[in-house]
Length: 219
View 1: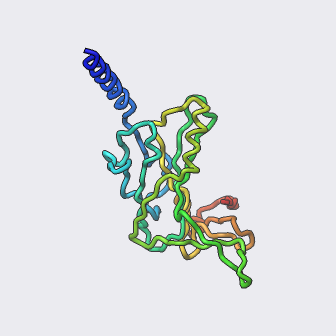
View 2: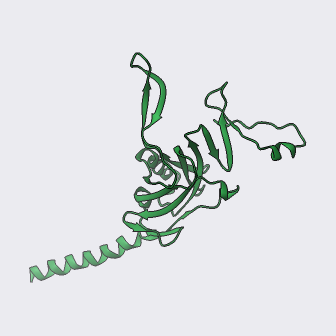
View 3: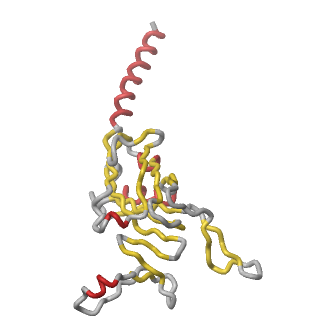
């Protein structure tokens, strides 16, 4: 009789635990449109696969997952340009909600690592070179870095314990010819002030400006 009671109790706990585990599973959304306010034909990269663990997304936006879903997302990013890409950054934006004072952003970067450039004396000169470039047509799979995932701990202090939706935005892409794409614009680094990027304007745009053009600097 004692054995039977233990068995029934264990079965009861199991039946309770199963609904609780499934209760955490809900529809999650990764949207990619809110911040694409430019000519989409200029985009040099594309998200070609979206996976949660080993499970592909239901479509380009939705997947069913638990509250830790962002820790298990993998994005397949393809170089759809005609140039070799040295690096790029993708923003994953958690919109302001609950007591959050503003949007919070996690950044997915390529390449994951860089190598220090040495001078003639074998000492680091402060510059870095990429370990791997992304050639036209190639695809790389990336996850959110652990350091970036710490943002999830931060937003818990604002009362947000379960992120259901995030927005994806291509922040910038740098090519091996020194040109950088950013939000639909081509940029070139200022030779007089390294680290500052200036927009490259075509003649049609220049001729259409009525007022003196105020250069926007990107750092």
